[in-house]
Amino acid sequence: MRDTTWRAYAPAAQSVIDQIGAKSLNAVTALDIQGVYTALLTDGRFKPATIRITHNVCRQVLNDAVDWSLIPANPGLRAIPLCVPRPTIRPPTPAQAQALLKAADGHPWRVLWYTIALTGCRRGEALGMQWQDIDWKSHALAIQRMLTGKAARRTLHEPKIASGRRVVALRFLMGLLQE
Image (tube, rainbow, N blue to C red):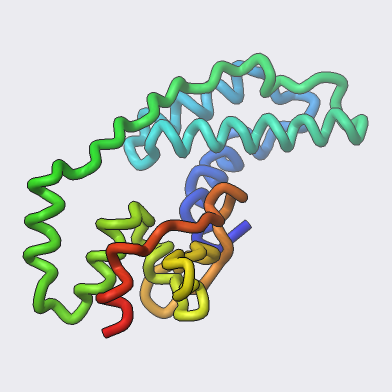
């Protein structure tokens, strides 16, 4: 697990420990786990997506306990996770994209803004790019890593999922990149 992921989920994990950590494993019920989710939701510090991930982690930990014959059944399977709607992706309109690119002209990071706007890559992916990722002959960029973290804790990582590694066309950016 990446350190940034751990720091993001540690408070939720601590809440689980605070609420049911004193119980023996055999005594944990689906209602206990459901109570944890409700408490996390009413706490106000946690987004539904974080609570959903907490559910997945609890369920997996309890699956491991079943596999290791520590408990006969997984109470996490009977707890009801929160439904988390996927956010609607709202790409910029052509006018908004043109305004961004116009504002980027003359900016020291102009190439970065153009790269993000014209490839659709994420900020961390753009910041993780290296010159050797560019195939100058085929006008393509291999997205292979991303910059994560904040301030002095920034590190380069491979994308979390395989589809994060991809090649994007650079035909419209070649002139800027060669400057």
